[in-house]
Length: 128
Image (tube, rainbow, N blue to C red; front, side):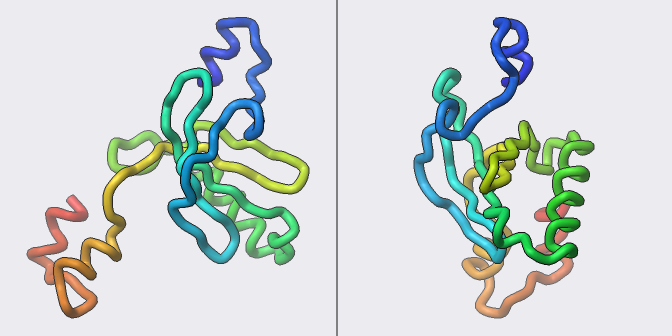
C-alpha cells in the first residue's frame, strides 16, 4: 500500500479517517480493540488494532507494544499475520495488519473438545 502511494507521488502516510472504512469490531483486549476495516482506495480488507495511548500508562505495557511492533515488522511467514503499517495518531496508535478469517485457536479447541486441551496427536496438524 505504501509503495503504491509513493509510486503515485502521494504522501505515504496513512490516516484512519481518510484512508480506511471501519466495518466491524472483531475483538478486544486489555489495551486495545481490533476492527475489520477496508482500505478505501484498494478495497482491501485489513485488521486494524488500535491502542488508546492514555491507557498505556505503565512502562511495561508500552514496552510490550513496542516489542510486538518490532517483532511483527521483522517477520515474513505464511502462518504469521503480516504487519502492513503503523499509524501513530495523537490519541491512538494503530497497527494495520493482515486480516485472518475463521476461528482462533481457543474457539477451535472449545468447539472440538469438551475439555480445554488437545492431545499431542490432535495438536500436531494445528501447529505444523
